[in-house]
Length: 109
Length: 118
Image 1 (cartoon, chains in turn green, brown):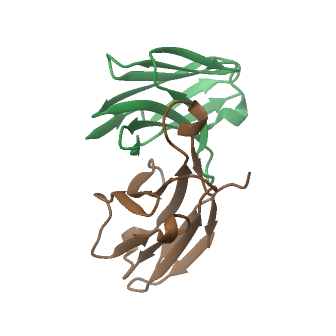
Image 2: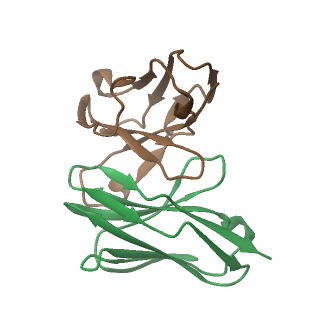
Image 3: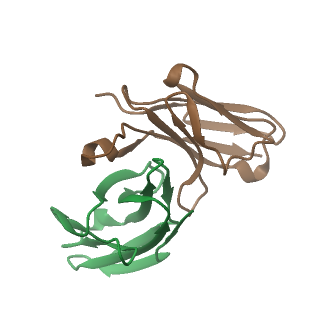
């Protein structure tokens, strides 16, 4: 089966760095996604990791450790527009994508 | 390329009524997903199609929900009869798949249909 865990809410300050953690248990694991979702909108793709390590994309980076069943999304130089929910999702070899409950990130000025 | 299309965007019905949602995925995307997202929660997978075949529908309440993907392109999701707890956003997503490149694995979402059951 597939199970995803991530914190429900986090708060950070504009200009700071925040790390959102995600742990997963997935049979036939084939990759880990991070999505951003603003209120009232559909999720938008941020990253996909299938190999161990850190992938950087501008202000956002995503890390994966397959042996630990662990990933994190790192957001640098936080901006007010980064206030959103961040969804961790795992992909298995049957192309099934299961989402966690999401982490609501609040950015304070 | 055009994105995933969904209609209607909003629907209000009374309990025990029926409703249907339509999704047109990105051209060439073999895998299509329907998710239910209740306010404040992550998307919950209802059903997954590979072309016109069902891959997973273990979380679909089959006594009231049905879905089909005729000809492996468009898909419809139906609820009959609706209950109050079906109030949610119904998201359709598609994915090219096939492994390898990140771009093949990215899942694209439509704008969703917001259903309110009174």
